[in-house]
Length: 228
Image 1 (cartoon, rainbow, N blue to C red):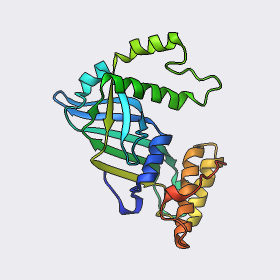
Image 2 (cartoon, rainbow, N blue to C red):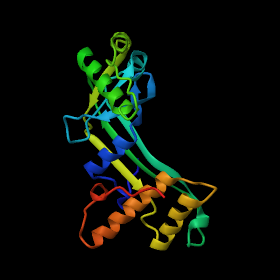
Image 3 (spheres, rainbow, N blue to C red):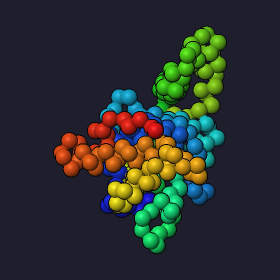
Image 4 (cartoon, rainbow, N blue to C red):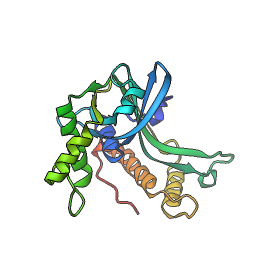
């Protein structure tokens, strides 16, 4: 991914937030048979405060990706969407796409069967706990027996990235009034409504304003901005 100094996303805490809020990732490997990609959910390693992630793949995907034999690229995609030139003050203007993304690269560590099972349980709990009656892997004897059986078809991994590239392109290079127009259209327009992208733009703009008075250093220091 080509980097632009105006759009660098480099703060570890903010990339952690991006991963936590967008856990469905793309896994890309350069294998003996060429490029291969799969899609799975990941979580941050709770025992680390860096960008280490935990995940799993099905055994067929383990073979396709040659997991653990070489570098794996993990693509984390945050809010993104189309930005019309009709929302710009500049003339002439062309369309663009605003987005937040991070690329994490490294050689994954393959987990033992026991640790993989624990990670699968934590993954289920992470997403299921907000349900009124969570269905956890070992919530009942029947669930536990089924989970133990099905987990044998998965391979767990831990990835501590050795290379990280993050990019946050949210019209930061535009005048304030143009940014407000774009946010308004994303929140209220009928053609390309995108509240999540608008909220991320408001969050980043709040950082820039706070930086000017020395209150914060990066987006991770700013409280959540409610969606309109």
